[in-house]
Image 1 (spheres, rainbow, N blue to C red):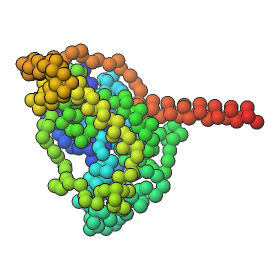
Image 2 (image 1 turned 180 degrees about the horizontal axis):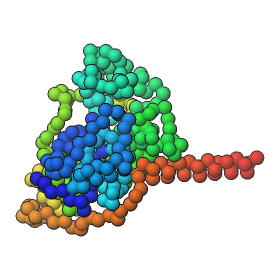
Image 3 (image 1 turned 90 degrees about the horizontal axis):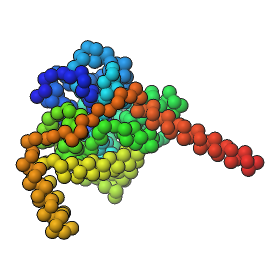
Image 4 (image 1 turned 135 degrees about the vertical axis):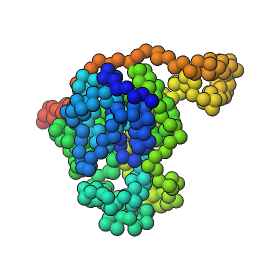
Length: 351
């Protein structure tokens, strides 16, 4: 364990999108930094941690190394002259929704009124399929249900730039959410948790930060992880669940691909176990004997050097005062303004 606070290291901000295995990730950060990790909770689901609030937290605990919170929905690239390391996880939209509804059934009595407004009063007693139907009737009456996208496009920041819709939680703009995540230091996916954590560990190691995740740990998960039998395109409700959250699905697909590409690159230079090494060698032999032999030789070299993880190049980014949500929203609004101006010029010429 690393019990020492460091004021020169990046402040890790784990933006915990609900129902994306964030409790497990937070436990790894707690294991790594002990009292220098902070799990932030707040009763108001619309509360947002601002840069100023984070600065106050650093004043109270200058050695703070990491923060996990559902309310990290503003994304500063620096806090109190310390660079941040922004990270989050995405999940398949349909699995997120099912997990959310199961959680609502278990914990409905503890929910504040703001969290109950999209749920039927008899939520704990309804069959899961019927609960999903009634929930979607309300949540998608006027717009798509995209909680992961809306987490990133928080309504407070978007409204300040003239962007808003009918949902107080945020916009369902894939373009803005993707732009924000492009500038995150790490985006993992729940379905590839082991690979995601291995890539995350390496990314932090490049910044001289060591973290220790239990790759087999699963916290705050339902006792029944199997998918409902009705969650198919043939079932009316199942089809609705699968077809909603279009922007969330696009985000998940793109960043899952990126995680797999990053992990493929990682295991070429780090020993990650016999299974990945065997899989790499098998794939290389399909290409040619020469490539297969080369893969085996590289695996032997990585195995022998496995106890000495050397930092190839310490990443020390320059301090930046920007907030990613404003950067992304400004880019979109500027483009909308230019397009509107261009269309107006064309129409004026035509007249």
